[in-house]
Image (tube, rainbow over all chains, first blue to last red; front, side, top):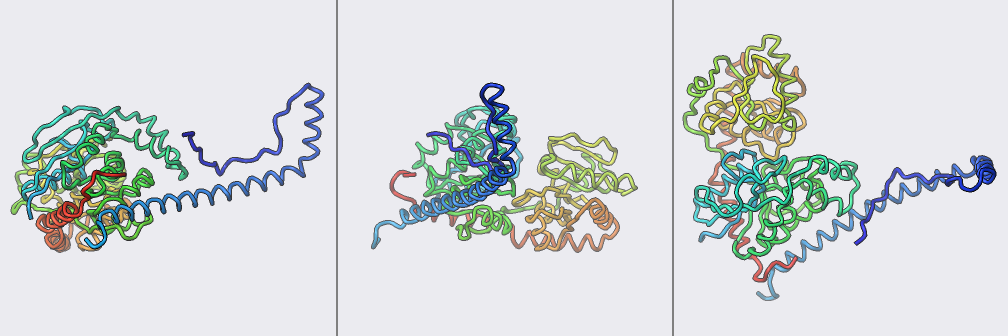
Length: 87
Length: 401
């Protein structure tokens, strides 16, 4: 089974990717990125905040699911010990 | 009631092993044997809880009335790997895989012990697991849940907050709590309010006349002393105790600090600090009874036998603020003092030395507290009831989980 990694609440969405291509291409990309900076950075920051909130909710849900699974198992065990009806 | 086949499952067991849970397991096991049960101790070959190195021979042996089966530990604890495995737990976000890794790295990792539980479950009518923290309990309880009793010896620590531990404590048929505070901690930690079981604890039976003079002579103790008995370890609050005691002693406090137990930390080189090493139980009663007070500085206790032994012989206890179990003992008994800081500890110790009537009143309250609540007859009748109940109600079929 693949290992499930927890969401890290500190992960941030970067407003820019790696600069690739020839030097002139990278220069153009850098200029575009700089020009869009005031527009993109608030958006990615908002997405990061949203992801952090989702991460917190998922952790709470995971805890609840674990709790419910444990309570189910406990009830099943208790029922097992009761024996057949009428006994 | 007829004698039952009872297994005591504990991470370590042996003559020289004096940890609280291990001693508790021995006392309960020996008394169960004395009440007609056939008791088998299932444990590992480890002698120390840091490395879990296989020191004692694997296989069957006798220890007084107890049959002991020891199983090897697969690997000694690698402290670096264990610390790394603790990081997700300390951060508060972890997966089931993280839990499994942490439990394995924490140890004792003894697949042979778990195999025995799985393959020989029907050889026993009841299993009493000691200490919820470690893998033999966490992984062993689900194998024999229908006849499992648990003495959790629970402390408030990150390593005790795993889902696997919550599962184990839910599955056992009864929990033998050491104190009401321990039960409250479990209810908070594992988010469950209706765990079966009752506050059981241990019995404390002090000798009628503790050998105070003999202990003083034997260890050359001429001045009044504050006693600390048990594992001398930073985890037990000993560093804070030294930090609080030494300034008081330097200022002419008028008493020594006597340390009885094996040291797992560097001890202060000071004439008022006396380290006696391991002390035989008979001598320890004399030491406890002869002390001006007993310091119990640990904030991680589920019962504290030394606190109860001290109260039983009329020696007041000094406990730190922030230890719910010890504060509970002081609150219920009225036989101790809770200190906040070094100045508080010094003032309490000065009072114990200077105000004999006050000390005697505390001592009398402590004797009453232990005599009313901590008798072996009461404790063992609770164990007998629990064993009888699981033996009667256990499933006919083999474990299914």
